[in-house]
Image 1 (cartoon, rainbow, N blue to C red):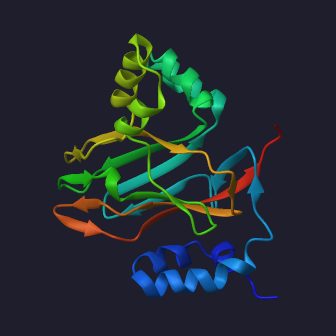
Image 2 (image 1 turned 120 degrees about the horizontal axis):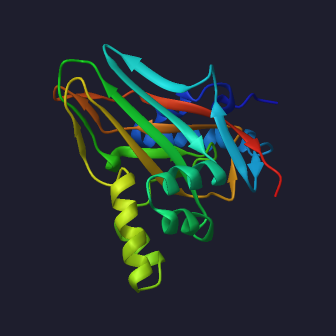
Length: 211
């Protein structure tokens, strides 16, 4: 049996993203050998290597970690957004905490439009944005309160990080029904001093949780 390149190396996924149709064709070839494994239902994400899913280069550090239901609720309630934490479970969202530390001496820009969560099954997920949440929630004062919290804590628009400063934001994704054992967070729109960094991939392993 062929070994699955997605499980063996998440860089394989990132490589395909830069090769358009050729990359998609490669995924179509290799995915069938990967579908026999994976995680269905509730899952946790842990770094593929080391204690953190992290990218560091010339003074720029980008890290991410998965926040489960309890941790995300504590984080959001600590920010004063109790209503938003309650809606996460109802909307079946999962949460990644993202931190960008800029010690490059240059202005850094991150745009959520280029961020994708790679499920390991050929499916890529974009972060949920303000418009998505607006349509998902019933109208009324409660929705306005949730949207206010979402706008404050999420990476839902382009952010500029001056030299010597950092940024902490939440990424909300629709929870997939199944993920591969190897997943990743691809940051496709990250710029330092106007130069694009196109190889930022934070790798995770998926671990099943009991219902």
